[in-house]
Structures are given as C-alpha cells and as structure tokens.
Length: 118
Image (cartoon, rainbow, N blue to C red; front, top):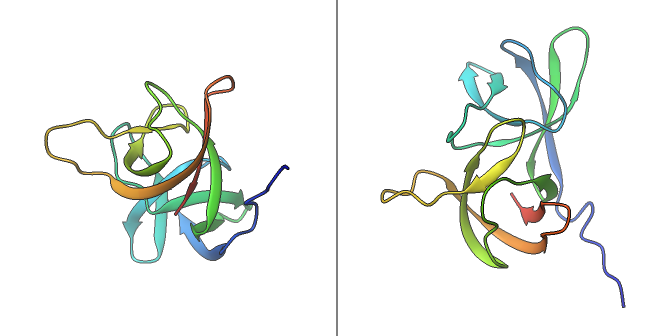
C-alpha cells in the first residue's frame, strides 16, 4: 500500500523577500515581515514555495515537505536539521545543536530526499 503525506497540516504565509530567493529554498527571518535564503548551517523557519516578481514569497511554515538533503541522512523519527548548500537541508551534527527538531517520515536515499514535518 502506498501512502502520501502531501498537504498534511500545511500552513503558508506571504512575506516580503530580502535578496534573491528561489522556490524550494529553506528561509530564515531577515527583518520585520521579511525572509531571505538560509546560509549553510542556518536554522530555517520554513520553505519558499513560490516567489512573485514583486518580491513577495509564499512560505510554508507548517506541514509535510519533501526536500533534497546533503551529507548523511537521518533516520525516520525526530531529528535536528539545518539548511545545507544549494537549497538542501542536512542533519545538524554539531556538539551544540542549533537546528530545529523535525519529524522525519520518509527517507529516499536513492534520490537524496527527506520527507519531514515542519
């Protein structure tokens, strides 16, 4: 039996962007009501789903997302994640965990993708 988590608990907000932003990129707060692309190792607050020409982004802040990962994938269950490079996420393996804790529900090691709940 195949299951899908798409749309589970999804919640979105519209926010202004600071700098260039590509859909599918983990984002962080960059000012009052503004988001920007995360740098490598940043804690992310959501994922840019759509970016309009006027500089407004639709940001998913809750629910299931599927994103590419770099490095060693965490197993299913609770794990700390931070942003990676190139719009990816990665496991937070530092001594002092700075990433958010997310519920990993599927790991596709063949295509280097994680499905998790924000």
